[in-house]
Amino acid sequence: MKNNRESLSFNLGRYKSAVDESLSSLREKGIMSRIWAHDHRVWKPNPDEITDRLGWLHAPERMKPELNRIEEFVRQVLDDGYTHALLLGMGGSSLAPEVLRKTFGVKEGYLDLDILDSTDPAAVASHTQRLNPEQTLFIVSSKSGTTQETLSFFRYFYNRVCDFVGKEKAGSHFIAITDPSSRLTEIAERYRFRETFINDPAIGGRYSALSHFGLVPAALAGIDIGRLLDSALAMSEKCKACNSPSGGSNYGARLGAILGELANMGRDKATFIIAPRIESFGDWAEQLIAESTGKEGKGVLPVVGETLSLPDYYGSDRVFVYISVTGDESNREKVKRLEDAGHPVVRIPVRDLYDIGGQFFLWEMATAVAGHILKINPFDQPDVKAAKVLTRKAVEVYKERGTLPEHTLKIADGNIEVYGDFSTGRFDESFRDFMKYSREGTYVAIQAYVQPAEEMDRAIKKLRMKIRDKYMTATTFGYGPRFLHSTGQLHKGDGGNGLFVQVTSETAEDIPIPDEAGEEKSSITFGILKDAQALGDWQALTEAGRKILRFHVKGHLVEGIQRLEKII
Image 1 (cartoon, helix red, strand yellow):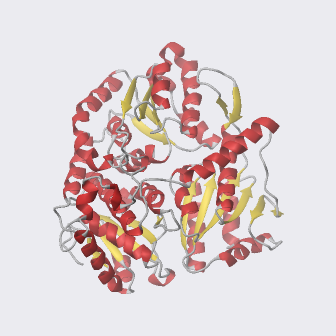
Image 2 (cartoon, one colour):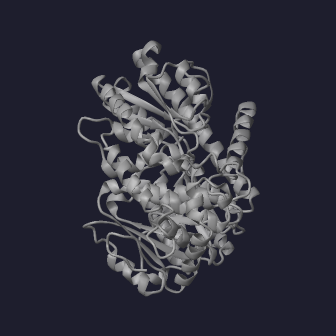
Image 3 (cartoon, helix red, strand yellow):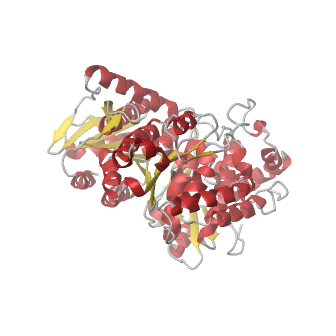
């Protein structure tokens, strides 16, 4: 299907007939009407974790009355002299604010917003050193109010604020965004937070971009959240039941049908090619798609951050999503070559940056539709708990014995130790031996439990591209523990096509986590928590039958990554 440049367009080749049949089926079954009517049977016979997860459908219009309150709150914060904001959150609570901050920047006179979603001690320390607590507003963001990382961040920074302004005033430097009656509402009341924003509990974390979770931080940075909602409302009209999925302009139905049907036919690697100005949108879409579809032995793997190459470097498991911004022609010719080579391509033009509000809604709807086609529940996350439970057990072992459980070391070569599923005794053959598990449809997921940094991003990207080009396999990358709240569900719940490469490092200077906010006693550090999370995920992957390789780098981390690149 080809449309004008202001619309979605699809070049599906031999897959077009299957998608057309799927769209006809959606129309005949009244699926779009039933989604808007909150009919759980679109996905499963049991309503659990479906009927109470459909609030995102109405978030754009229901958030409109909240604009005045949010804008008044922002004015009060600015009048009180705050200059910076740090969001403490994970997954759905942090990704949309991060996308909006990277896309729009900070408007002059508003708060310089940053996000902390890493338990790496160096990441925590970097914010500690950069921020003046007296002029910083801390946003504690958690749907459940029980997220371990978020509460650890809160306890640490609350104590730091107390050191500067005292306990009487410390609470006024914090706000909460959470669900009604969550543990976080109790914490906010106990510590006298400046404000608590109660979100619609029928909105799941990864579907919360257009709710308080995304919009309050955005407003603090000076982003026009009214325009974001207008864009989302316009897109929701293009996804309404009155727009026939077959022969009409129902964007959500069409995109969802493509993702679902092509995944069923083996094209289950949705590879994003995104204009540089909105490139970070891919990180949000990655969580939404992976955590929603990766279950029951199925899944759509979002591939974000690969450098676009020639068609011959891609297998028959890819569908490409090209999101362009008006005036930016980067990658246009390369995308055309992919189409000419027979790869299915979806083109999504974005007119201006505020259209990202519409993109949030479009992808939420498309993911819900794809869930119907895949016959899974796109609103639960049954395999996420596994790593959390095993992390908690590892922490309990540490508290009892003073050390974490250890893996069996197989190779020590200079500054790198190697663990995992391989049989060679040589470091320079370890990765190639590990890749013996590769088969058609395999992807390689790199999981780095290290401090997020641009230098690290560049080194990992080179590593990824070498793996892709040599083995013609899709690659993904995530910082730990952040990815546990996004792609972690798919890693354990999909069809088992992933090969997992953990990268860990030594902790130079650790930071204690207070057992209680306002108290000095500490039973665990951020470094131990991060190591326990890596260990817990290893065990969860192993119990799910996945193959995993771990490189533990001592000393200079980027140099270690460069060594790994040479042995690929």
